Length: 388
Image (tube, rainbow, N blue to C red; front, side, top):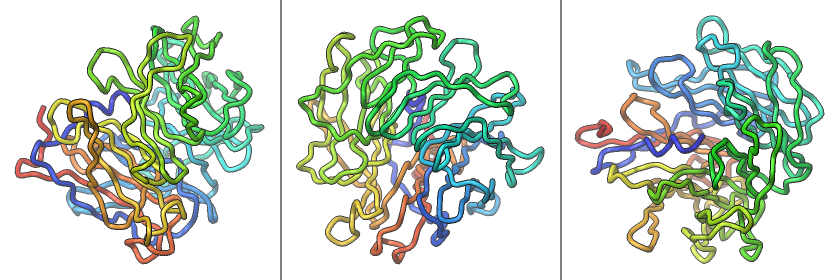
C-alpha cells in the first residue's frame, strides 16, 4: 500500500541528479510499472513493459559499474498499465501479476537464477482492458489477493489458489467503475483493508473480502475527470488516512486531498493544484518526504504522449509542499521529459531515495530528441544518505 512511501526521506540540503537509464528503447505504451527488491540485495529495481511487439523489462542499478542494467523478463506479452509484485508461492522471491492488452490476467515467476527470462502463466481470461492491478492481504490470512479494475468496467477481486499456477477465480465487487485509479488501504472508519477508487471507496465489511459496501468519496460538484492516480497516506499527520488524487489524462489537471468525515457523504476536499495552474496529465503520484523535514510532500509528473507537446507545454516533475494553509510547487526536473507512473524507491543505495519513471509514448519534441526514455532522479547531498 502507498502509505509506506511516507518513509522515503532524503537529506535536508538535497538536489536531484538526473540520469537517462535508456534513451531509445523503442516499443510503445509503456506501462505495468512496479518498484520492488526482486533480487534481495536491499535495493529496489524498476520493471515496466508494454506494446509495440511485446516486452517486459527490469532495470537494476549496479553500484560497482555505476550504471543501470536492463534485464529482459519476456518479449512474449504486452502488459497493460497496472502490475503488482507479490510472493504467492512463499519462496522468498517476488513474482509479478499484470493485465494484458485484451482479456488476460498474467502471473510471472522469476528464474531459479538471475533476473532474465521469466515464466509467464495466463491465470484468467475474460477481462476487458484490465487497467489497474493492485495486490494486498484483503482477507487477513497473510497472503495477497489481487484487485483488477477493467477500464470503464468491472472491479474484481481474485484470491489466488494454493498453487498460483492454476486458474484463478474472480469475484465481482462492482459492475462498472468509469475511468481508472485504484489502490488498497485502511480508510474511513473501517478497521479492514478497503478498495479505494475514484468512483468511491469499497468497505471490506467482514474483513474477509466476502462483502463489499460502496461509499461516496469525491463530491460530484467537483466534476473530476474519471481517469486518475490515487495514493493513500496520513499526509497531515492527524492519525487518519487521507486520499490524494491527481487527474491523469487531461489539460488543466488538478491534484486534491480528500478528508474523511463520515461514510454516508463525500469526503471533504482540499485543493493542492487547481486547474488554473495548467499542469497536464499528472499520471505519476507519490507521497514522500523529499526534504527530510518530517512532513510529507506530494510528488507528481506530467506525461508526454501528446498530453504535453514539448513546445507550448513542456512536461515537468513536481514537488508539492505545504506551507501553512497553502501548497507550493517546485519543479525538480525541467528537461522537457515527461513521466508515466514514476515511482520513488531506494534504487542506487538502501539509504538514498530516487525516483524512476518512463514515458507512455514520446512527444515528437522532447528532451531526448523525440525518442522514448527511462529516467532516474537520485537524491544527492554532502552526506548522500537518508537521515534515520
